[in-house]
Length: 321
Image (cartoon, rainbow, N blue to C red; front, side, top):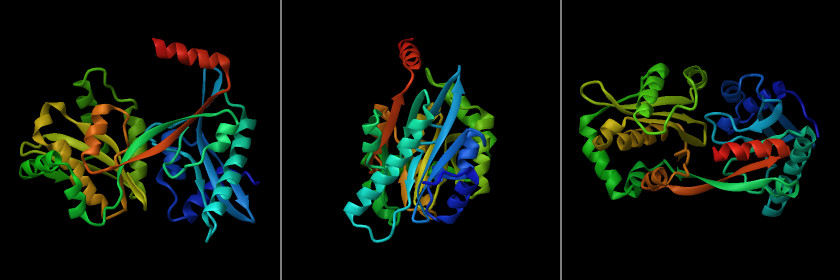
């Protein structure tokens, strides 16, 4: 095993065309800060076999690995050898994952908590070392090549909303990051117990990085009075587009703009990538809305472990407040 520095990790990101968006070095710089993340690299026969990226922080003297803001998944990426059958692929995953878990255990962090890609399906090496897992769900449109077929899979209600809203809105792809954040802030203030979980500078750092790398876009539905009813911040790589942030004005719930803007984003993303990921939600109402877009429910793992009894007690006490 050869664990090296982040410079080598950056070279790996640039070397593989299909390297995941959320594991890109520039994405991690934006959401974690340049000194707030690190990565392990596992090599086999002189080739990169896998990488393991993570976000680390210190809080009140505790050392934590946690999920970064605005990032659905981090964790392990495999570089599979060519022409592997299912058995060899399984053994390869076990070898790489066990190596990373062993190194993670040596770090002896007080708390570990990461979401893994939906493509990561075997968490046994974590289980064997005392980690826990809970399944979460995202919702995906699995093929954007035939937009007529995509639209036909929408529920009757969604199709009706789009057709009703279409004549009443223009679609704006030029909304600035600052204007989007202000819209998000204002819309959440209208909702009970809702607030933006990140500040404007955090959002703009990520937004600007995505724009610089041509992997981010704001899509907004604007009425004749130049009022934004709904806007989305969409990010993508070669395989997936992600509906990262939605900003929907509840004063215009009946206008259909929130559904129309999703459809327009899907159409736009079909020019860049293959799959549209709604970023998931465990909220019952949001889940129901996502499902009506003809999506496929797709599980992914949240893996976690408490190594500090004191910190575990503090976390449990906070949950009861």
